[in-house]
Amino acid sequence: RLIQDWTMRYPLALGQGNFGSPGNDGAAAPRYTETKMAQLAMEMVRDIDEETVDFQDNYDGKNQEPTILPARFPNLLVNGSSGIAVGMATNIPPHNLREVADGVQWYLANPTVSREELLEELLLRVKGPDFPTGATILGHKGIEDAYRTGRGSVTMRAVVNVEELQGRTCLVVTELPYQANPDNLAIKIAELVKDGKISGIADLRDETSGRTGQRLVIVLKRDAVAKVVLNNLYKHTTLQTTFGVIMLA
View 1 (cartoon, helix red, strand yellow):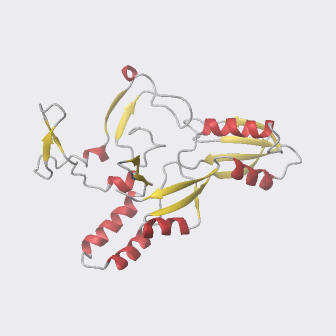
View 2 (tube, rainbow, N blue to C red):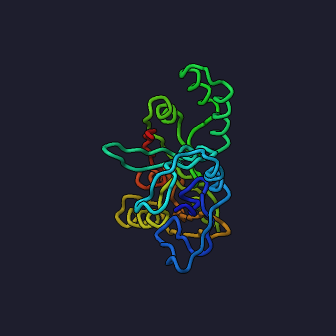
View 3 (cartoon, one colour):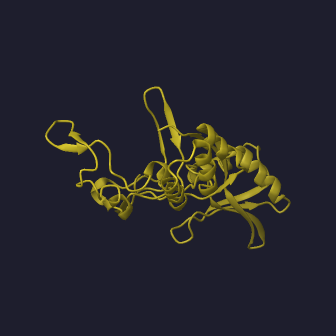
C-alpha cells in the first residue's frame, strides 16, 4: 500500500515488481517484489538519532523502538488516514504537501493568533483535499464543514470527456474518484445496461495502460444524448461518490 500511487498521495516506499492495480489485480507474491524507503519517508526518520523522540521496548523486550516517528512533514494530513480506534472512527483525506507546508509555515510565523484567525488563514492556504487519483470535488461546503467542525461530506466526480472516435460519440473517463475500483465500475455499467436501468450505451472498452493512464471508453448508441447518459452514470455508479471526512487524530 505504501507504494501504490493511487492509494497514497505521496508514496513512502519505492517498489520493483508488481504491486497490484487500482482494479482487482492483486500484487505479486513477496518473493517477486523488492522495495525500499522513498526519499520522503527518509524525512520521517532523519532525526531519529538526535534524541528527538522517546523510545520504548518492542513486543518481546529485545529491542528499542520509537514511540512516534520524528517526521519532518505532517504525514497525517498529507497522506491521510482511515481506521477505527476504541469506539472512534477517523477518515482524514490526503492533502497537497505544498499547501499544508504553507499553512504550517504561516502558523510558525504567527504562533500567537487566535484559533478563529488561524482557521481562516489556513482555509486560504489549504484549498481542500488532494486525492491521488485526481477527479473533481463538487462545491466547497463539504470542505468548509470538515475543516470548521471536523466532519463533512466531500462529493467527488470523475473527469469524463465527450470524444468522437471512429465516427461514434464516446464518453472517455480519465480520472476516477478516490478509492473507486475501475474494474468493478465497468462490471456495474454492464449490469445496468443489461438490466435496462441505463440506456444509450453500445459498448465499453478499458483502454487503461501505463502509457495512457486511466482511460475507460464508453461508446454510445447513435441516438443517445451524451449528457443524459453521463448524468445517469453519475447517479448509479462510482463515477460520483462521497468521502465522509472525520478529522479525528
